Amino acid sequence: MADNNIPVKILNAIQEAGTEMAEQGIKTTEQAISTVITGQELVGDTKEMSEGEMAKAKMEDERKKQEELAKIQNIPGRNVESEIKEVIQEKESEEDKEQKEFLEKIRLQREAEERERNEMVEEPENAKREAAKTQFAPGKRKKQQPDATQMSQTSEFKGGKID
Image 1: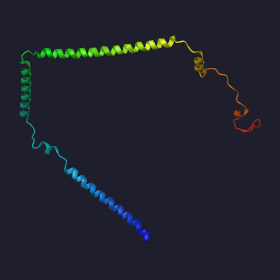
Image 2 (image 1 turned 90 degrees about the horizontal axis):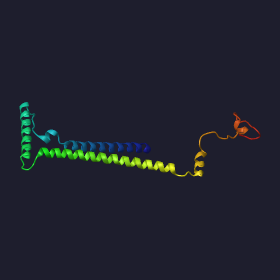
Image 3 (image 1 turned 60 degrees about the vertical axis):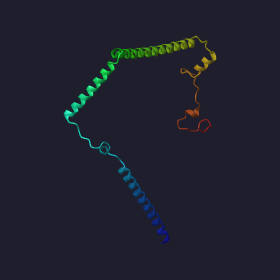
């Protein structure tokens, strides 16, 4: 009887521990959810703009842009159009320079590879090395005849040997 109570007690203890852990997880999740800030709370009372208000806001933005541009252009001794052209020309010259450098690197690399190939051709060949290279080369080879035990398909006794 005492043996039957021990497994039941262990299972009950495990069940209680699992229930307690689940309850703590639920409480933690509820706390996390309650701290989340919604968009409505963050922005507050907002309302959508009507078509007229939207058009008015766009006109205001455009007017501000024009005023900024006029201020920049009215600065004495400053020519904005020539500055813009100058910046564009600088960009183009930088791109051309980078492209030329890239092509020069490729040309130098190809020249180096060509020199290396020429050096490889001009090197005197080592006879031993060449012989070693051709040692395992494919082609006709002298084959050895298998002995009788290797030729037996049923692995029978042949010539007094057991295969």
